[in-house]
Amino acid sequence: MEKIKMTTPLVEMDGDEMTRILWKLIKDELLTPYIDLHTEYYDLGLVYRNETNDQVTIDSANATKKYGVAVKCATITPNAARMTEYNLKEMYKSPNGTIRAILDGTVFRAPIIVKGIEPYVNTWKKPITIARHAYGDVYKASEMKIAGVGKAELVFTDEQGQETRELIHDFKGAGILQGIHNLEDSIESFARSCFNFALETKQDLWFATKDTISKKYDHTFKDIFQEIFDKEYAEQFKAANIEYFYTLIDDAVARVIRSEGGYIWACKNYDGDVMSDMVATAFGSLSMMTSVLVSPDGYYEYEAAHGTVQRHYYKHLKGEETSTNPLATIFAWTGALRKRGELDNISELGIFADKLEQACINTIESGKMTKDLALITTLDNPVTLNTENFIKAVRETLDTLL
Ligand code: NAP
Ligand code: MG
Image (cartoon, rainbow, N blue to C red; front, side):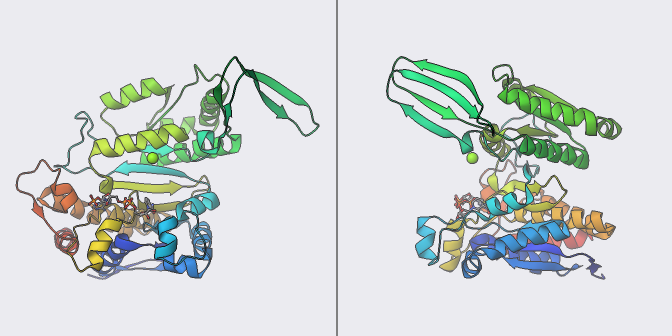
């Protein structure tokens, strides 16, 4: 078979620990034998981030703006222990945070569905994609402990020094206070990212807040979504035969549990934090969650939702056998290759991506899987493979499909 040619490079962001090992295996076994892989390589492994004072992370995000599509390996977010372990010059910020700040995107997370790994919610037949707004609210709050009697007010001072006040509470005793904010610009780009992603994946979009209680704050989210939808997206949604649906957050939770899945659920920052863990767990396994950052300008960065699987890496370093699930990382590559193919009109890339995903699914459904899945599968007599042998098994399945 002749290798598939690419025209525009993919931005390749390498990472850390066990996922860095997976990264190389995936490229060697599942990609370069079939594709003339054309990437612009950025090493986001912590060693090189430290060497470049984290400039490499910024460069990789700017390259994503230039080329449009990136694929990222999981990376370490340094903490005190990592400072010593890697002899770091400073405690660098999370690469994902840095990249998101430059691309201004929304993260969409969706589970990979296979037979034999059944969701705990037995009505769920299709993936539920969570879109989490990643700015403001309680994550950028100011808080105060109130010692005793006194009056708390919201005060806004405009550029002319004019004050607007709103009573929060007349305290008769001790209590607590919290001030949160959000920005119209940020809510607008969140809305556009969600509408674009719904159109692109041909799925309904659900959005929910608590606007009956929060008549200005949450209501603004609702209004911005509705205005942008009516002005810019209503026609396109109709043509694509998909729906935008708004409801209250508690109603949304009840409907999600009764649903079949197959839609995007847009969540405010806190709701997204909580609900994405609920949805991921209910679908079965963290190692099967994919993630894509979509910017309002149409840049895409694909990755796995899980981290660097540190515990497995330390076993690997000791020469012990590991059984690490590469699916979410493989699907990051297939997502990026499919998108590159779409943008460059190279249909072979999309077809290859589909086949590689199918090969992963068929391999697991045939009973061959990594340990994390073997522990929870409903299939009888699963065969647990180690990291390398599972990837080899996927390659064998892929060869029968090509
Ligand atoms: P993690 O890498 O997500 O792993 C947590 C546990 O989940 C693992 O120990 C493993 O359980 C299981 N697991 C996750 N992915 C798996 C896979 N592909 N195959 C099999 N099992 C899997 O989280 P962590 O160990 O807490 O974090 C490690 C590092 O990742 C941290 O330095 C953190 O900063 C970083 N991180 C990066 C990202 C990112 O780049 N997007 C996201 C989250 C965390 P068992 O050990 O029980 O087998
Ligand atoms: Mg969380």
